[in-house]
Length: 212
Image: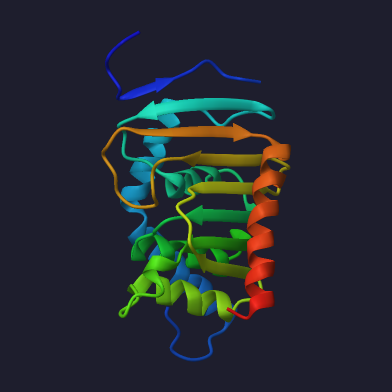
């Protein structure tokens, strides 16, 4: 086994708003921002493609890497060929450009429905981070988005696409730039998808029940 950890994989395992806007204007602005904000992340998506192809159904990759890619790179990678019907994301923290880009994808219909489970550390400090405020306000005003800030360190992305794929990406990296050794599991499995969808949906339900 090589000592080079650049990438190592086990064998496969079978806004801001400024007033009302028309949809077309909103789509145009969103698409422009996507191009601007995502250039570096498309490089990361290409790095993910270099490590492994999209898994077929019931296929799994286990990855150790020092390449700079994360769950957001996977979103971009999948959107190159598929549209996302449902997205469930549990993560400790996100940066502002990534939040802006995800919101843009939702607004233009590339992501139909999204649920976010994020650490309450960034929402309950004396001065919440800008991205936390932006995401909270967007979810509150969008029927296709749900969110909860809670005591979590989980890092899971679960996606159902319009073509019937169920992608899961989980591991040590946050949705921020990282150049450390990170480990991930990347698979296409409906049962695992439903598992992660279930516990995140339960958190959202409890959040609404408690009025938090």
